[in-house]
Amino acid sequence: MADSAGRDGGRDSGGAIARLRLIRTAQIGPVTYRQLLARFGDAAAAIEALPGLAARGGGRPPLIADRALAERELATAAKLGARHLFLDDPDYPALLAELDDAPPVLTLRGDMALLGRTAVAMVGARNASAAACRFARQLAYQLADQGVAVVSGLARGIDTAVHVGALEGGTIAVIAGGIDIAYPPENAALQERIAREGLLIAEQPPGTEPRARHFPYRNRIISGLSVGTVVVEAAPKSGSLITARLAGEQGREVMAVPGSPLDPRAQGCNGLIRDGAILVQSAADVLETIRPIDARMVRAPSSPFTGPPPRDASDVERRDLVSLLGPVPVAIDELIRQSGFAPAVVQMVLLELELAGRLERHAGGRVSGV
Image (tube, rainbow, N blue to C red; front, top):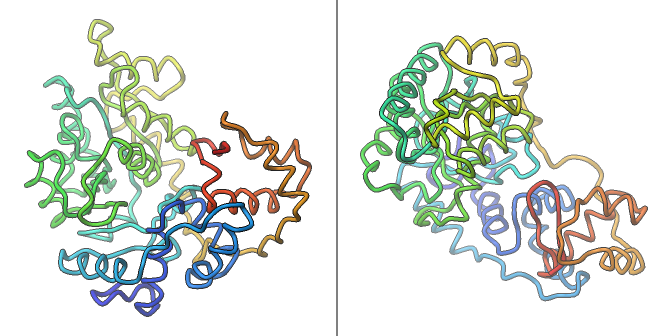
């Protein structure tokens, strides 16, 4: 475990600081972070290489987060009773580590043992009906009572009911802002209680107020921690359906509670069931769905940054790949197919372009030129 001085998994504070500097540097997201560590072996070497990579991509190097910022973040987390958990830490959740865009670092407060349990996500409408909240609370209680860690996002409505129901048995709350920011404000007491009795997780640095763009990032963690996601009331195009879609893309089970066709808040769940989601009416339905896939919960490798480093691309390869990019997002697999280049070469060029500010990454493994 990390201590308050910043030690993590046997590494000294300098290792944690270098990782945080890299993670908090603009233009470096989860995919880029993983590729840099695979290419250079450690964060300090990756930081030294950033200017050269950006120059090959035809742009200025990103403004690298300084050491003082990383030290302040570590000190702030320690004062809050929190710890940082890095992607290659052996305690990092195995299912979450499977994602290509797994968060390079999480900030946590609470019972780390909950990360070792089978987890199920439960999400739903913020303006949920009283009946749906009651059902969600009871379902969460019954699942937690069976040893399942119940994951949600601490939003109003269904999320709140879920955490209240599962708190005594074991609940994990993933929040969109910093570990010390209560949102919504009326859930401040519940958030603090979860930090004491359950587990509170944040991807953003301490002190970060949640913004609209942070919620989809939070949603991928909610579904990524879990073997399946249960949706209880959701209007069409709601955030809960985004979480369900992410769960499906991550290869996890998608479950939904049916509702009245006369209630707009049930349209999302009924649509999910129509499209193949598993219908849930009781805890037994959820347990029956998830128990057969418990065997897939194997520990992730101790380091996700293994494998031979990719070779540098030639000027010709770099030019040809740039010519294939445009403002419309395209799948990386399509770039590999059209260029005929090795996947590692394509990934390396995209990395250079991203660090140079000439590439934007999109959901579903797609990229576009800037």
